[in-house]
Length: 440
Ligand SMILES: Nc1ncnc2c1ncn2[C@@H]1O[C@H](COP(=O)(O)OP(=O)(O)O)[C@@H](O)[C@H]1O
Ligand SMILES: CC(=O)OP(=O)(O)O
Ligand SMILES: [Mg+2]
Image (cartoon, rainbow, N blue to C red; front, side):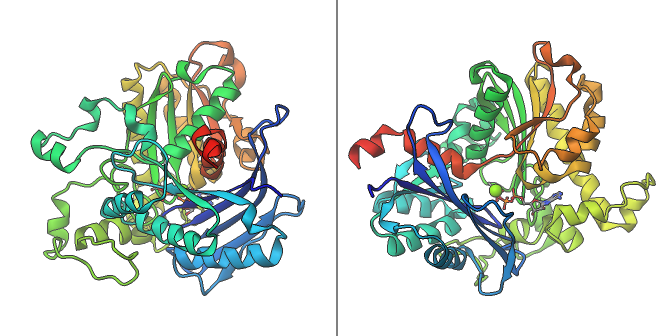
């Protein structure tokens, strides 16, 4: 068979998500690729990691199993390869491209093939995405050695945010130093936001360039994005994925002085052996990226557990002092509302939809319900309980969980849930990129 397969690898902070596709440019296909299999390794930062492997042709529900030997993204990929070789009868030489989600691209705006030069560019940026770029590089290395006939292409989370204007992307610091050192807001989760933008545009039957949206990607790492006329106007992450919303092990925005009061060793370089190779970060970065967030407040990184233990039925505000799960839940709510409010003003209150995505966005029924109540004052219609409850089980990529009365109005402020898929976004882009296929 001709080499026609595209493997997509998404190294998130706590997970490795993998999809294998066959290129399919027949005009009858809705997507330029057909899914062959998916695999996911989650909870890498809160062991034991959970592994799943699912062939698209298998109609049974996939199940997850804890695997003790998975310690990092590299061992996660090896485990996947073993499953691929034993459970799928696929000729690996058919894999022509491997798409890698690389969180920080710095000044690389377009996808690049992995060469010595681009590899080192990504490596140099590792300190600016300590939970991500090193992990992606370890997977890239493993691919080069295990699947030598395939070409690796890096897709960057940062690319989507290239449209953020200077007054929003600049920090109020010495501009000469900022320019020299590339100190600006880059923004992340861009592959997810590209996917969501296209999916919502199809769902609303409106061209992307006419849409104003507030997008919430709430997963182990969480961010918000204001989209104006189909382009990123602002996003909550910054120079690194630490800024903005808290996450599984990340603090999100803090007063930068806090860290010097937290520890007098803030500036020392850490020697944590579990940090990906060649990532050199300070104690400050280590604490705020890996020893903070939900894990630090509650002991778990799972927001589903936090929600179930938050005693949401109890309205007593004093509960936040007694129940760390409630504190974490209310704190996240507060920070998410902060960005929703600010982005409405930046978009002149002309918003087509607020979109929930990512693990918490897609599965956090209670979280969406409370946000829905809070944003009623901005003119959002109430959330439909049944739609909200069933959103993640629906097959559709985008589900409208708001009441339908206002849908015919321009800028109807719908509340949507989108099953985002960074792997599909990369495979799609790769398949449609003539540079790659003409050269192949
Ligand atoms: N039922 C649930 N309710 C709320 N949050 C959930 C639920 N199930 C999973 N989650 C959250 O989703 C997170 C994973 O999100 P995901 O976007 O898949 O992660 P990643 O950022 O690693 O790609 C988990 O860490 C967990 O906090
Ligand atoms: C950028 C980022 O934080 O990604 P993830 O949520 O996948 O860790
Ligand atoms: Mg993710």
